[in-house]
Length: 104
Image (cartoon, rainbow, N blue to C red; front, side, top):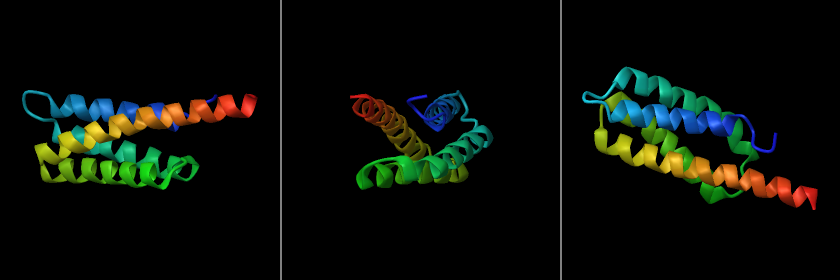
């Protein structure tokens, strides 16, 4: 497809992490699992993403998700997952635009 499968899986990891964070009592163990999924997908996807700033910011977001879950840091977790979700959308658009340019 136009958008690599890793992009929606990265988005899914962010959704899962965010939902775990917003539970009455954060589900830290599952947040660690979701952060691990985000890390695995991001590590495979990073070389295919254009823009050093986007790559740097996503690396920062995924690292923050991992640290937030590990240290039970709600503020870091919230900030990191918000950034991760935003950047996953940016990457999806980037791949769509790249495909459109290739077709013209």
